[in-house]
Amino acid sequence: MAGAIPAFAFVEGALDRAEFLRTQPGRLAALWPQARLLRLDPEGRALCGAEGAPLDERGADHPDLRGDAVLLGMEDQRAWFAAPDPGLDPDAPRVDLRTAAAHWPVREATAFAQARAVLHWRARHRHCGACGARLRFERAGWLGRCDGCGLEHYPRTDPAVIVAVTDGRRLLLGREAHWRPRHYSTLAGFVEPGETLEQTVVREVFEESAVRVRRCRYLASQPWPFPSSLMLGFVAEADPDEPRPSDEELEDARWFERGEVGAALRGEDTGSGLLLSPRLSISRSLIEHWYHAGAGAAGAG
Ligand SMILES: [Zn+2]
Image (cartoon, protein in one colour):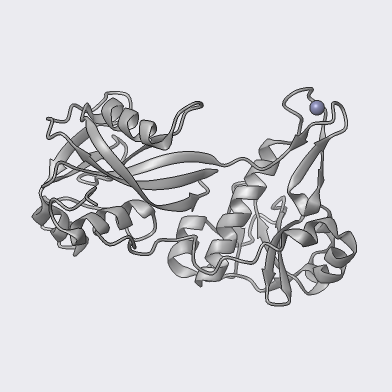
């Protein structure tokens, strides 16, 4: 089976993070006036133009935000920063990340995803988890230092597996109760402390569907800042058990035939068939990958 999978959001156009600049306050100060600035409101939405398009703002436009700004990275000679904006103007248009992913240029959308993740971490980690003292942010926003006990706090990312499970012929998908009718997706779940990714795949699939995975293989990953996940995409081969969805997490889980999945991928909605997510998340890409690889190929090799 081919290693590449269809593209998904928040990967293309990533900035050069230029980590070495984080310890050079003089150079950061010099870069700031001409730097591209992304402003995010407390809900993680970006301030935008009237039609939802990205703003082309510079640091010099917002000198008051300099102190809380985080260096995202460099695009050629231009720096990009992100800063929380308290959102004092309630009428200022703003756009959420899912919408931006569908409409913004990829560099802007990927930078927005990075900004959302790191600013969310900072907003939720204002104080030291060990002693409770207020953190002081250094390294262009990427390190929270506790002057109370000396601990250094770094941005957190929560790993989660997401997996296309096949019994060799069909694809296992599940749905949550609050989703629109007939909408199904790949199973997913967070990695727990002390667990390998492969163990997480086996455990999560069994917990959510009672289907037993025999083997699995990693394919690709996607930053998923809703608010702070990293989705680790797998394909898995499982026994053709009858799915028994867990009451807690899934309303339904079932096997889908290749023809049903293909019709959904082509957007053929007959009013009764399967519906899938748009091409934003790695979930859709895993499903497409399984479909195009052909029945029985997933997990082989
Ligand atoms: Zn502390």
